[in-house]
Length: 185
Image (cartoon, rainbow, N blue to C red; front, side, top):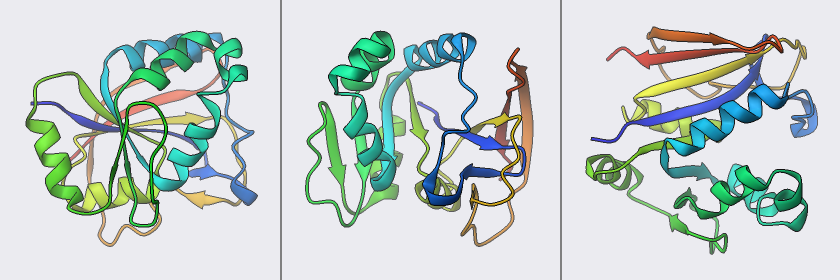
């Protein structure tokens, strides 16, 4: 059975985006890029909510992305993707399928198929929904050594509290710390 995990970068004060949707605070360097490539090598499918999908689909297929980060761009463009949205009319990014309804059934079915793990990148609203459906098996939260003071909280909208078990940590030279958690059911 495949695992579904969330990967999200957050600030020390728990925001995944700053005011005006800013993510210019992301602490990214060569070590992070190596980590990102290794993580993508272990992924069989990506799942996005509409907003994250639109950002990713507007960047990774571009000539700039292919020239600036060719390895990640190739992986992001070729890995099968699902975008979950009730409002999006079509999904044109290479290897992308649109799911408008029956999300729980769709993700549950994908988990049962053989293959590499399924990753949810960004997409906090979708992540909260998947947590509430009991479909996220792991949370990979990369804490950046930045305090914004305001922004959008990672788990905004979660209706009930959530207990987590720390699986492992990974410290980066940049000061980033990656926390691996498993929801306690």
